[in-house]
Length: 104
Picture 1 (spheres, rainbow, N blue to C red):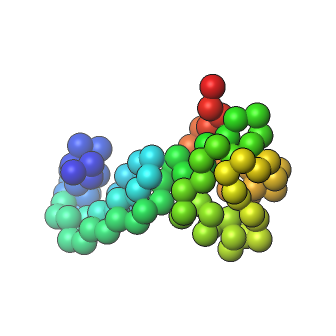
Picture 2 (picture 1 turned 90 degrees about the horizontal axis):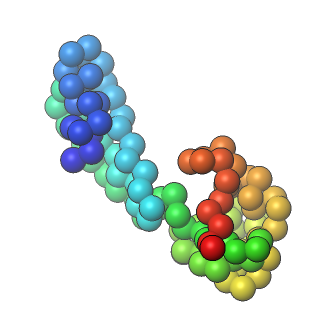
Picture 3 (picture 1 turned 180 degrees about the vertical axis):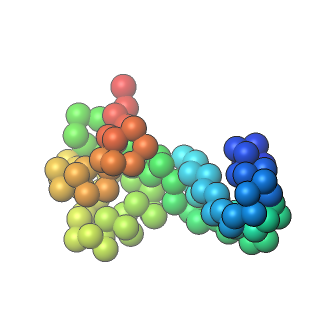
């Protein structure tokens, strides 16, 4: 489990603090709640860092969780259509490397 490998469990054990460890992958995010060095709760959601791929400003892949999140922001994302600048500014920048992944 990533909470162990990252040092979050040891940190919680050594400091007595409660820690929420997030492991953000390409398509999922896993969470572990750690109290006094013990993982007490875990959860996973089907949302990660690579849910949309673009090439030349056009969506080449849009995973369902990304489409739902964008819809809640009033943004339409669809494969083969241009990705509107507000989508990049509101959902892509500031996360991960600060920009959407462009396909080569």
